[in-house]
Amino acid sequence: MIEVKHLTKHYGRQKALDDVSFSLKEGDVLGFLGPNGAGKSTTMNIITGYISSDSGEVLINGVDILDDPTAAKKNIGYLPEQPPLYNDMTVEKYLAFMFELKKVRQPKKEHIRKICEMVGIADVSGRIIKHLSKGYRQRVGLAQALLGDPPVIILDEPTVGLDPAQIIEIRNLIRELGEKHTVILSSHVLSEIEAVCDKIIIINHGCIAAQGTTEELVGSGKGTRTLRLVAEGREQTLFSVLRNVDNVTAVHKKGEAEKGCYEFTVESSKDVRRAVSRAVTKADCSILMLQPQGMSLEETYLDIISGKEN
Image 1: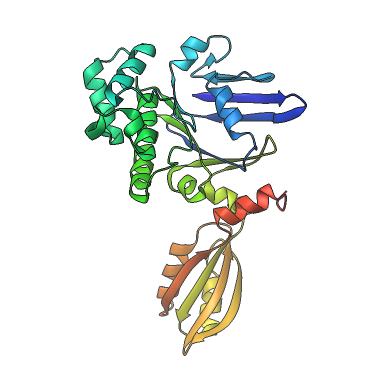
Image 2: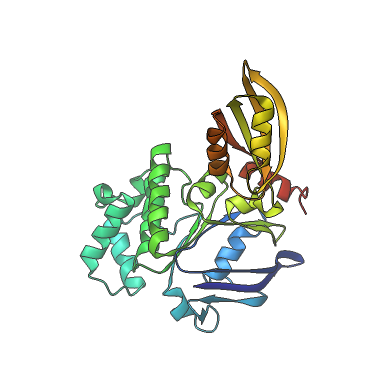
């Protein structure tokens, strides 16, 4: 659905992007992470055809964004960080104007009504945009991105200005969009990226510093997973049982957590939680706690952008 190949971009002497490449298929939800000035918005602006790259190419559903921008842009719905709103229009008139501008072919009134309900602005559709709260204006911007039901949705900081309840609603909407659309989401809120995205790209100094699923980024790519286990039973029995579980690579004793209960750290090459649970139960011991351990996405992100990971 989206192919980004070897993008480079300079602003004067400053290199904003340096050989950025990635691809997405239908239904992927990609999260873009990176500090201010890292190249996130530049990449998104190039994908949407808002600016051009110095070299490289972007294909949207097989169409080059530079060779045939009109055809490529028909596949894209874009919400920039500052929504492109006409503040003196009512919500309904603005969306009707954007409907005509985008040359959408669906039944006009029904299509706009459906989108207003989807993003939660049906109750303010008759109000003038400048009189709306920032959260509602953000929703209006999201509504215009969804006009025409484009297969690719690109969202730059979509939850800025929303209250916690609205953020949850927009996250749920993004998940729903990901069932039928390819979504690219840029955000500084790591918990938001982790909650809704199945792929993550961390960009820093114009380069892709890391990419993969959350699980891959926080450690499985290194081949090691860690569990913290507290169980009731004989320490040596538990130690022996854990060492014999398939895919367990190391077991470390941590001592007595409470009377008759012992703590262990279990390292493995795969997810062994269920196998550990079965093995401990079979040995007539009881698990009191079984908790995955490891770096959070935030810790991983900070390590990557600070250059601690290679």
